[in-house]
Image (cartoon, rainbow, N blue to C red; front, side):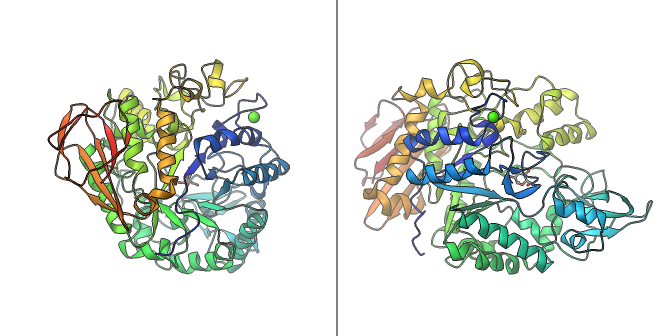
Length: 557
Ligand code: GLC
Ligand code: CA
């Protein structure tokens, strides 16, 4: 595997709307990001991914772009974006934006023109089909946010357009070379501005299985999951390779693909030496226990499932490329609330989870707030929900016969708002995020979980993350921490997640006791110096480590 400039880095995802508001309108902004660059530097971050800040009606919080070449005024101006790039550069921080090109907004000029003249140039930028009222739609796919993925084309009763996400996110027709050219031009325009690269949104969806056809319905609504179509679609890599050739490869840009349900044999095509992306997220743990029926039917992930799934991903990718490791992002519950059993979320268990994920092979992405152990919050009513996906899932649960309380419990855990609530900077009003009214509720636990409280406390979650980052960036450990193979240790021992990172001439042993009860672990006799411990003490007798509940340690071994 070829070594790349970004391999030993630590990445951080900013959800700008909820990061830092500097003008009191309750919405985080670019100025807020600029003012926090020193903070990111202090934490040890090298790559920053900004969720979308382009012009957008914010129907899906910016993942519905109405102008790819401009910054939404709610977030700031292009001058501020340029200032951010320049200030980040001074600090050796690489800025990455979101690339959302499976769809645009229905308020994008392309779509408006397509509505004016569906048979003209811009009509061909989308999937527009004839449809007579009362007749079946072109196919029965269910959009990711619920309901049919076909919607009447505004102004044309006899036509419908395709949207695999929200109806305000019409799909772009990648089969059309003219559309692809527009996208490459836009990507290069941003790379020329000094952007380091992109996180690439929902990208597997750009290749449709054509002609449109029905698949067996999987819910009472008579529709089927988009996944059925994606399983059948072929030729995705023709598009991805062309895009990489025309854009990213020319700039040695860093790219992280949002790839779900990839096929085994595709891994090298995505992230191998000649792959179309630098890296892609490991979602194997994220999707554990998902149910085709909906959120209300999802089960919690057990520590054993987590461990075995992680090990499978690690084995699969070693020697091929670099995955990106996460415990959460803006679409997922807070990792500590999701993977740690209810009632056991505490600083020790949060550090253990962060440590287990951080020490894996691959690129760690911290999602804003993860570094201080931010948690899910509790909804009192569905009216408090902003996330369009959660609103749909509430209805899905009711339709399946859940009581309103059960439906609320499902979205309580999985709602994307959990991770999108504002960052807790300090214990002052609104957690120091905004002097106005935050656009989304601040988690009421901010007086106890906030950065100001943790920064000067040596045993805080924040200082633990700094330690992890420091270890990753220590050149003395590059061969093990960055390039070492992950080799499970005592994989059969219940609720123990332990692994070696075996590299050229050096080896580490990483261990987490993934339960609240203590347990004994026999150490290999190669164990040497202790590098990290999430508790003040270590107890070893006769080669056996007595691990406290949720203890996490890293040894040279
Ligand atoms: C990705 C984004 C998500 C968005 C969707 C549609 O999954 O992460 O937030 O809703 O794509 O763009
Ligand atoms: Ca603002």
